[in-house]
Amino acid sequence: MKSATISKERMYEIVRGPVITEKATLASEHNQVVFRVAIDATKHEIKAAVEGLFKVKVEAVNTLRVKGKVKRFRNLVGQRNEVKKAIITLTEGQSIDVATGI
Image 1 (cartoon, one colour):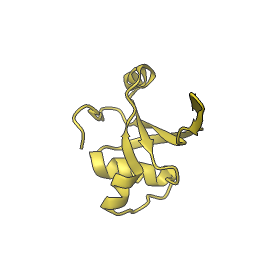
Image 2: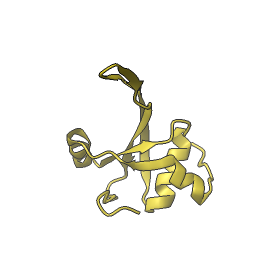
Image 3: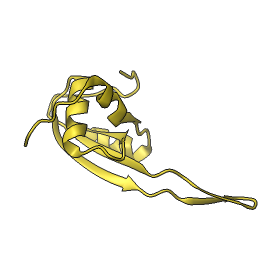
């Protein structure tokens, strides 16, 4: 697997923020962290960004896209934005504290 070289600005653009849910917290027991990422980011870019920003070794990257829901408020119809999530599996002994930030 080829390692992508990306700029520091692109790293901050790719990793939008952590996902803090009950399911994401349970994943942390299996040495996994969940982040919201840019829609156009590839798995190689996500791996390079997480390794560059947090100084950890990434074992695997799994991604999923969440389609925007149609929501109604009175007579108005709107749609939420589409979101891409990345489930990052870290190597043994590595950890990221998502509460402290970068």
